Figure (cartoon, rainbow, N blue to C red):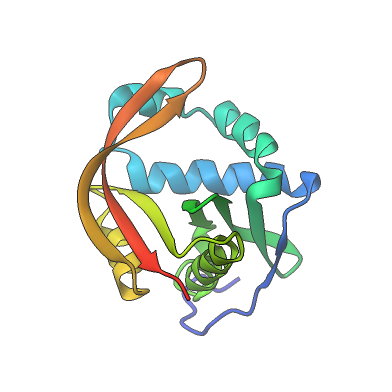
Length: 168
């Protein structure tokens, strides 16, 4: 498989099923490490084990849209209310336009829920993700501390930037 394609890859976007969630957990775990290690508190990095992603993914099937390419799960997005919580694409599919398609789908889901604005949090040090959101029409509203859930402990504050997009 050629991992250096520049063409847009046409993925099928569809609601997630229970059977997708182990693949989602794997992409989430790897993508989270790529974007967050070195940018979040050590306690959070320690809490984000492979098992933690499996448990969290299993609970979130109803909030998840997956991108399927070549018969496999290649990316996903999770939406909760007006927040786009997670946007991840498997490493071989990055740069294919899939993340932008997932982000657009997430905004559509937020709008369909009756919200006029979508928002998301990006780790302050994750420059690659911040450029991606800005290119896709999201506005940086500035720094804040995002309370990252740490079951069973208290949330761990993570230095983030809040990005917003007007919908409609």
